[in-house]
Length: 75
Image (cartoon, rainbow, N blue to C red; front, top):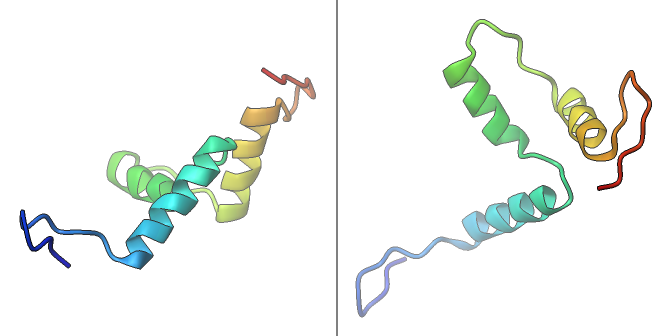
């Protein structure tokens, strides 16, 4: 859909929803998996792409200090 006044193309409801979901996830420290997959394929084709579950776990560990060290970091 385009603006009748300036001709600017406006996003559809699905695109707005995807953007809002991505924003909410980034606000709580969970990266966007689809963006990660696109980046990995374009920039690191020789490496194996993490599954969605692995990506989520890594995001949580980075946010809350999990992992092999077992340390908790709030801020």
